Image (cartoon, rainbow, N blue to C red):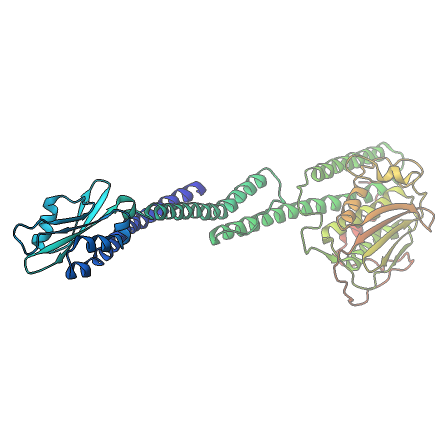
Length: 488
C-alpha cells in the first residue's frame, strides 16, 4: 500500500508538472525572443530621425556608430538613390539581409524579420519621400534571442524535480502513517495468536485503523478477562475442594487403627494428591495476563473478606477446640487484589494451620494498616517451622512451609506460592517467623499501590472464644463436615 500510494502520487505530480512546466518553458522562450526583437526595433528607430533630415553618408555613419548595434557591427542602413536617376544607393554598415528581403520590405512598407546565418535580421522601413524608402537593418544574434531561456528552463526543471520529490516524500509519510498502524495491528494479532496476551495496539493512524485498533484491544481485554474468569473459577473450585479435604483428613485421623480406617485415610490422601495435581497443572498453565489481580481496577475489601473466611473456618476451629483471635478488621480497606485471589490466599494460610498444627492449637489473624501497605499476620500456637527459608523455597511451583518440626507430609508447596504471588503482584512480600503464640507467624504485606482507602462501617471482632459466634449463613461445608463420623 505504501509503495502504491507513492507511485500514484509520483504519476499525478509528474503529469501536473509536465502540464504546467512545458507551456511555461515555451512562454519563457517566446518572451526572450520578443524582448530581443523589441530591443532591435528600438535601436532601428533611433536612425529614423537622421534619415528624415539627411542622406549624407558621413552623417549616417556617425548616427549608426552612435548606436549600440552600430558599434558592435550589427546595424546597416540601405538608402536608395534619391533625386537623381543616375544616383547610386548608399550601403552603410555591414549588411546581412538578402536583396529580395530588402525589396519585399520596401514594397510592403512593413518591418519584417529574416533568418540569416548566426541569427536573425530585423528590417525596419523608413520613408524618405513619396517613393523612396530606406531600410534599417539590425542583426540579432541567436544568443540574444535565447538569452536567459536556458537558466529559466533549469529553474523550472529544478522546481519540477523539487515538486516531485516533495510529493513523493509526503506520499511516503502518508503511506507510513497508514501502513505502520496496519502493520502493528497485524503483528499484534500474530503475537496474540502465539499466546502473548498482554499485546496491545496504539490507537493511531486513519479513523478506520484507529477503530480497528480499538476493536482489537477490546477483544484482547475480553480474551484476558475470559481466561482470568476461568482461572478464578478453577482456583475457587480447587480451594473449595481443599477445605472439605482438610476436614475429611482430620476426621479420618480419629477413626482408629482398623483396616477400614486405614483405607479411608489412604483414600483421602489419594484424593488430596489428585487435587494437588489438578491445582499444580492449572497454575502451571495459567496464562500470562495483566497480573494476578484480574486487571487494572480489580480489588476488594480486605476486612470484609477476612471476616467472611474467618467465619467460615471458625466452625471447624470450634470442633477442634482451637481458640481464634481476629483483630484489625473494624474498618473498610480496599486493596488491589481480586476477591477470588484474596479468598484463595486466606484459605491457603488457614488451611495450613489446620493441616500442620495439632488439634487445640490456637491461631490468630491480625491486620495492620499503614499509608502505603496493609500487613496481614496469621499466627498459630503450633511447633513452628524449623527452616523458614526452606519453607519459602519449597517446590518448583509453590513455597508452602511445613508447620512443625519436620517436613509436612503431603505438602505441595502451592499454598505459600498462592500467597506469595498475590502479595508480589501488589509490590508486597511474604515473610515467615516466630509468632507470639509460640508457633509460626506468616506476614503478608500487600501494597496499596495508590488505591484510596475508605472508611466504612465498623466491623466486628472475633474474640478468643470457642463458641460459634463466627458461623454465618452460607457456610454449609464446615457445618456438614465438622462432625467426626466413624464411617465415611
